[in-house]
Length: 319
Image (cartoon, rainbow, N blue to C red; front, top):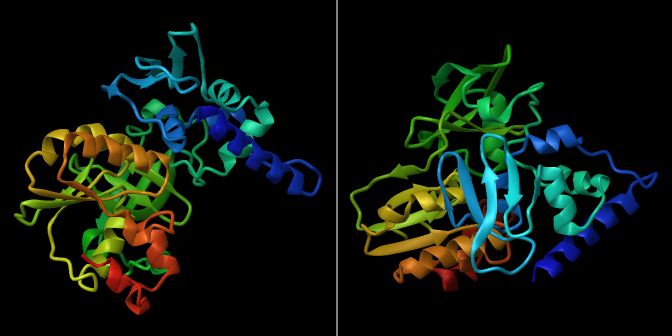
């Protein structure tokens, strides 16, 4: 399975390089790639931690099939060590070994992943561990900036602004703004057309409606997308839990036990598959609801590319 995934990744990379004009591909450099959270790199490949705390995260060996977690990430240093083989390194070292590729091929792959911790609003020499400290929120208000409103229209959720804020913030002596979605630790998930970051402590977001049933979403755009079609699907409002990153799945175990029914709306990828498997293993009542958008990357992708209200087949998928 691991060799198959590695082969698929390498084949895709080689195609991108061969299709470029001179056989080269402009990618991020090693310094930039190595500042991306290694947890996010592993998540993109479908690997979730078996246990973690604020300082470290443990995984099953991503290079081979093992039953005991022997792969550790040091979160503050953003590096890894594999105890079963006595090797370690940074992001570049990991991906070179994972797909058996050159540095250039690794960087081509990384450029196309749209990692949330690597922004187009680049902050020079920004240290990963200090990202949450080196900022100042200047203003929080209703969304009114034309660029943000247009971005919401592109994502087909422009009528769900009651859950959002317009956040203006300062970082490294530069001013930025974006769409803010508040989490349970008073941090904000920040999105605009060019940026995907979190200001403050990373956490889940919960919206309570005094229900004994819960809907769980991977990201807040999936939640907003569902709210857009909730009435059409003949669904009643329930309690909602938004992970804001599938890596937060270990933070919700205690919350799930309080509900009689649980609906899961995760991405159609390896990480989503594993997250749903983990939840269903501990909660028999949990239901995988991805049949609703089985041919699309995620719920928002389905909403953007398919008009559900005009889809006759949707009636067959309603529950």
